[in-house]
Amino acid sequence: MGHVVVLGSINMDVSIECDRMPHEGETINGSHLLMSPGGKGANQAVAAARAGACVQMIGAVGSDAFGSVLCESLAQAGVATQLIAVTPGSSGVAVVLRSHQNNRIIIEHGANYALDETRALRDLNAALTPHDVLLIQFECSKSLVEAAITTAHAKGCRVIVNPSPARSMSRELMAACDVLCLNETECEQLFGITPTIDENGTCPEARALQEVAKCICAVAQDSASEKNTPNNVPCSSSCSLLVTLGAAGSMRVTSQNVMYQPSFAVHVQDTTAAGDTFVGYLAACLAADMPFEQAQLRASYAAALATTKVGAQLSIPTKQEVEAYFSTKGGTTQKE
Image (tube, rainbow, N blue to C red):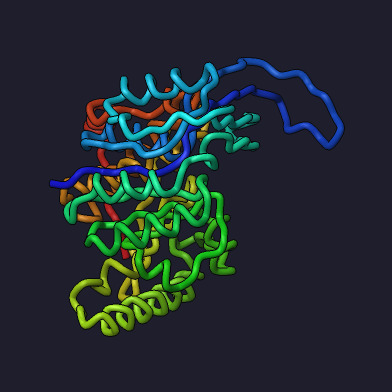
């Protein structure tokens, strides 16, 4: 069983609820102000820890008042924090507007972009073993993210990338990832394909996504052949696209098949950390050598339950809460 090492952002979320999103130049009334620890990296680290994994966080906070609060929140969730740097200036901050179960977010990266890359890569290299999972997002500098993916892949680790917020990735970089976990918007931005679900519960765009997976797999095989290590990059893992589809569930796309996982009906309060909960739980389950289908199902359970509470890390459920909630409701298995 491996550990989960998360390299990513650590933010303070300032969230406010409104009846509708304001227009440009407009001021409207809001309510239910909430300040809570967040950041995609930190959220996913907390989710993985609450799923039962041993989690190490690599990132940075500022020297402001938020920094110590953010580190303490991670520690209380069971995340190891000794590799979190403190940089001069502000911590990362996200301003979240919530309206009718949707949200819009503005991010000030702060310390997340001030993280010393040499130190971060040194810590990453020391923390990772071949049995571990690296979980990474795109809320840190592009050069650091790309170097971290390459480093973890070279060590034989399983690499899970949540390309959010979306930015361009080379096919070579994608080939170093075992799982690209992305939503519909990120899928459209990276591949020019917007996945939808039809009345039969299937995705008309799935075949086009399979072609993407085949292309990435071919790059991975070519890279392995050039290094004379053909078994170093298995095709089955290198071509895995996991697309989350909101209320429609999620689907895993490989060069061989497409597997759908329906979502679960819950009373939605706030969707802020649902995606991060999904990714963090997935990483924890895969680190525990759970079969992918079961890991995707468990991640779906957790993400659904996360939407029943307001806030980022505050809404992420524990493994026990997930099991207790869904044990009496039953699960919906995958279909091809």
